[in-house]
Length: 437
Image (tube, rainbow, N blue to C red; front, side, top):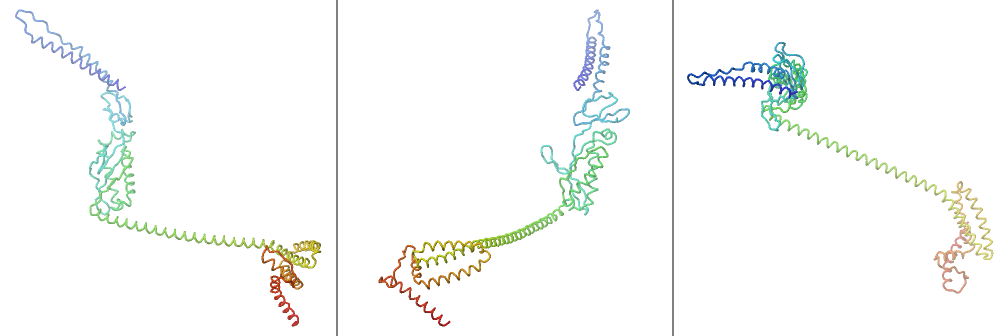
């Protein structure tokens, strides 16, 4: 369609040019004819005719493509249009990017930029990143001090309300409407806050309230505010110096608070470590106590099996003593008596095993007494058993040899005399005790 528009426009212009060229050519011929000098007596040539009808027809015909071309309006991308009539004023509705048709010479289209636009005060940067120094927005705080605000407002014309913007708002909007509204909003809002609140304590609150106020006011005029940025604040020189020292003190205070908190956490960690150590020691003590209890219990359980074995050993030693007694008395009858003793011992052992749990303490005492009595009786009857026991315990490789007490072997006589001497002494003591009794 754009090609058709420019084609029709070119055709109309070409017709005007052709018509003008025809008239110019005919006029040139007429002027040349009138300037020509004819000889005397010669008949002058007739004057050339000017062709008025052909140029007029071309001119009248040229208006047709021009009118059609003028009726075609193309709204480029990122723009919006509004039809303005010479008779009815601004017509309702928005012409979005594309091809539209209007009445030539009666209506025309006013184009508006519908892209995001920026209104900036203070230092700003262009598309190449170069800083451009601008005038900040000066406002008064609650204390009466003057602040310089570097503000950026990102806004866009509402495409649906371009007819209202064209009919009611002055042009250009970026100079006539946006700056006064933004400046008024900030100058009404900032005096409610102190310099400290605007600079740090309530900076975001001030920016948000200013955004809401600017968005509300410009929204009435068909301007959509997308974002209001408070980029920088210029403080009075004296106040800036005082604030800088105050901030240093606050930072020092914050640092001390952080260090105090760190020390408190370290104390808590130490307490937790001590508590954990305490719990560990208690658990270890409990574990050791339980181990000791289990060991005692196992020892107690083992004693239930050990005591019968001890009793068996005592009984066995008793029987061995009796067997040794019988073997010394009758070597020939030792085998038969040993079997009899073994059978008796087996019966007694079974009887003792049945009664062991109930009478283990009594049997232990009685067994010890009986063993001592039997050994004493055996030794009293057979003193030579002492010599045999001594010889057995001297070495496991020493063989036992029985010799008469009155033998003529010097070694045996000395040993036996040395061993009999205590026996005579003990017998004498027993006899003395018997007499005394």
